[in-house]
Amino acid sequence: MLRSILTCSLLLFLVSVGTGAETEPPLDRVMSELGIQVDLSKEIHVDGPSQGLFVKVEPKVELVLVAKYSFGVEPATSNVRAGYYPFSSEPDLRPVFTCGLKAGDQSQISGLPTTPDCPHFFDPGSGPFGLFVQSANFNPGFTYAKETVYTQDRLNSRIERFGMDIHKAKIYPYQTRWGVKPNWYVVCWEFSTNNDYQDIITVIRGVKLIKPPHKPKKAGDLKDAIAMIPNR
Image (cartoon, rainbow, N blue to C red; front, side, top):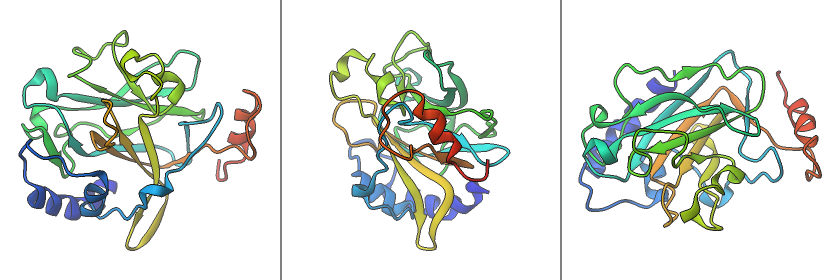
């Protein structure tokens, strides 16, 4: 369903921006051309242990990559992998899809540019989970021991070149001219250090972002936040 809804606006965007790598549009332009009406100042901020975590509210979750603005056209730099991990002290990375040369043979792509026929639906179970992305430019071979970017800031702290700048995924509600889609979110990713947040843009549906009912004071508050989510 998500793919069919996005197809028309995304294909128009593909025509409008072209495929060259010489210019990368800013995030607000990318979102606008995708038909996603998001005020970039309205990022959803969550503090504490639940930051960057989701929980499913539908039988399955769908994760789609809708734009990529980085990297070269060679396999060594263009491939991107995305997936999820159950919440734990050490994330168990579970890939959902890979976006590489077969998805468009270019460094700047949009219009559902994931590898043809790859799955987008997954079942993360009933517990909280986060999302991750990996770039072949910074993580050749997509290994856990090398660079991975997470929705949870605390996990990004292990990437030395980020320094103290560890907020690498911005999360927004998914909104079009028809309104906000319940249980849909846009996640804008930053692989590097210039913080343009359009290196990768993904849409996830069938989930709620976990937000604690009050300012977290301890790890146990995560359980309280999950219990507050409706329709579970």
